[in-house]
Length: 298
Image (cartoon, rainbow, N blue to C red):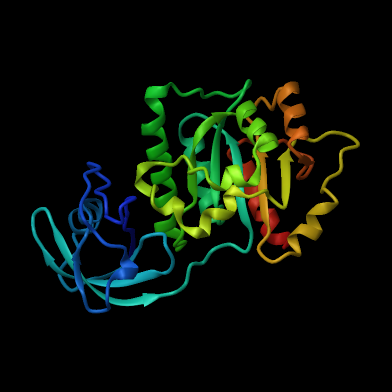
């Protein structure tokens, strides 16, 4: 069955992903089995117009708050479609490791690829970063559009792979500012701070599941280029991976690597160097290899 993300805004109402109009729609968990409700415009467009679904066809909806919901199309008009809720399935398919990647932005399809594949491997959040050697420095007028696009890339990957809790794509920061925040911010300050995400998932980011992102990670790892005398795997990694659902932060720099100053800041913030193999990985490949390695080691 086809899977679709049912977006819910900060007031508990669904939002139309195509034109961002607020429409009153409840969380799926508030609906009783057998009740009927309208789909968002984006789902109507994709399911009913592009895929040409017919009345009676069944699909899966998820809103990111846990589990997924089996529905059946019971009415289709030119602009709207209504479904009946048939069942709730409590499978989130979340990874056993909570992970946040600080990822220096790259150009074009490479960034889409990194976000898509990291999502398939169960990343919890991606903090977008700019750096001294990075290719991308967004203008203020570009941020909202790019953030919404990259969040949609992650949501589309969830629809494909079966993950029911989308990763949060966090608004870009200069890497120096992000590392300073990690060093100076107290736990209480962080917990009380809203996560900077796209309006599409604003209410979802406040869900308790994501609160761990505002706490200190169990381990911070900086993927580094191969260097002689550098340990392949930090000694603390095995112990952290033996914990129940550990929280690990990863820092992945640009193609040109981090500057000397940025590396020093990363060291001060507690990012241990992690060298995966003897080859230099591309910035879009590194998240995939790192997450896959963590899951294999755990």
